[in-house]
Image 1 (cartoon, rainbow, N blue to C red):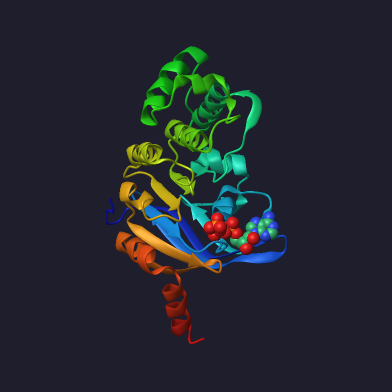
Image 2 (tube, rainbow, N blue to C red; image 1 turned 180 degrees about the vertical axis):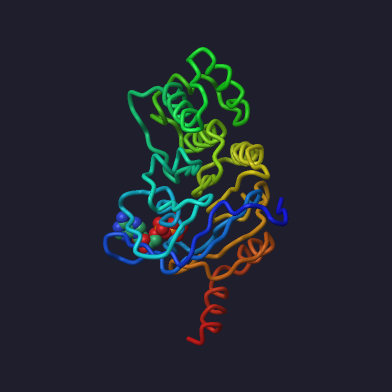
Length: 262
Ligand SMILES: Nc1ncnc2c1ncn2[C@@H]1O[C@H](COP(=O)(O)OP(=O)(O)OP(=O)(O)O)[C@@H](O)[C@H]1O
């Protein structure tokens, strides 16, 4: 859904970041405009999850250089909660369990925080039930999951579905999906993808990190990036994902070496 002149949602320039004093991101550049769906693929350990965690403001990751501008503001200056309120949503690779906090209460607090941030009136528990019911339908989730503690005892696939429910509710400007497809059966994959597609619009953007081309049959990307060694080595269209599926990553790494004259 690329439109000429769409506003830039995320601009990442020469981003470098360390984990435990070890450089992981080594000069990452990426620009995402409104209405676009981007996919990042790449070998294990190339820094994909690190990138998503740096964007969400995870404290274990130290940014050592570069800039990240999200909708005109310096994202790196914002606390993780502020990033979320500003409209950055990260669907985790391993969603956290929060024992003792009901999913319904958790979702209502998150929803009201975002409304407050947008200058809108908070909704009470009664009205929230109508809102959440509509969103449950997006991910075809059984309402019984609302009364359980957040993700506690949920299966891997149920946790991922719950992440997409949060996303549908919060309507972020930038949704980052970190291997949301892993652990999903075929039907759940289609439901999750359909939830993402229903959310996707000309005003927001999606960044999907995945190992599997099959997700991209359902969430069709405008751009596919290959990450290796903490950088984006190459960018293509959805056909690139098909080529990667067939040929693996070595040829991309080799082509980058030849380009760099190494
Ligand atoms: N807390 C940490 N301490 C030490 N090293 C870490 C830590 N977190 C990540 N790393 C290292 O950073 C590198 C990049 O990891 P990351 O999880 O970002 O890769 P990835 O591309 O998402 O991999 P995968 O496809 O396997 O999920 C890896 O070598 C990993 O071991």
